[in-house]
Image (cartoon, rainbow, N blue to C red; front, side, top):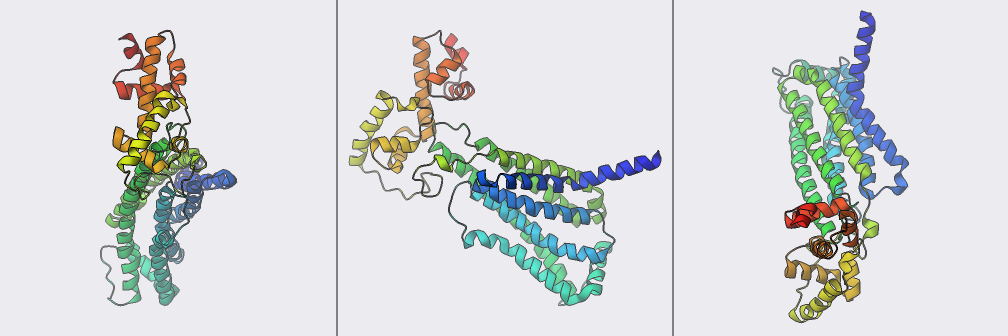
Length: 397
């Protein structure tokens, strides 16, 4: 019985250690099977999952406390290279949310640290030879607090590259990815709100969830790096907690990436990227053009009630006015101090109030549909945000 329990414990422990690898392979395979229907961010995430599955497999080997130092130093090269590929791919995922443009050298340059440090490490290990490489790894692991390498030797250079410089690059990438990813999610939301009157199915919540997962994932990475720097013994003893949390985090992010729906097919004349008023070079809307456009815009909204179309976009308005969406966006921003989404939904809520006054027998669902909202829940949230009251509270008053 004790032998069976011991075997079961080993199986459970191995499953926990392999959880991030299994989860990464699962999402990579699922996205690969759906490659034709994926958007570009999902394809980037698919590549990330393949890289992460290889990384987590290496981490499993390293977390296991390898006694075979011959294998350890070879895995160390793979770990240095691929781990520093994770962050560029995370950056590219969030970057691709806002553009359809091809990758340029500015994006590819993110991969240089991993290639350079991995290449230098491989060269130095080859320079030292297998026997010296094994001795170096054994010294680093077993005598962390006491080892000293002679400056200028391959061992000293390898320690400098694979530990000190590696961790500096690691932390810089974390800070850069977190900052740029947050900005890209904010930019994505602003772009969607400046173009669509209805945000249902535009994956704003999914992108926010992926960003939250990214913060958690990088926090786990920082904890792992800190524990290794503090004590390898603590590092190895905490492996089950760290790997299980990593697996759950990867699954959480992968789920929301998989649920993300492409919106590029909804955008007209976007010139390859999601529109925001900051992205395009805007000419000043002169007074004559404003005086011409504003009455036409108001007639389109107030008399023809275009805001009642649930799928209304900024390009629809620009097409009706025979002008560029840039001018329409600027008019809304400057005249009404809000974006397109907020403006249209203000009109819808005002119309809903009139409907309730004239037809008190109508239900919330009927009011929502007649006012241009796709769902009663969206109408309820928007109504309370703008009036400070729920539908029933306002109706009772």
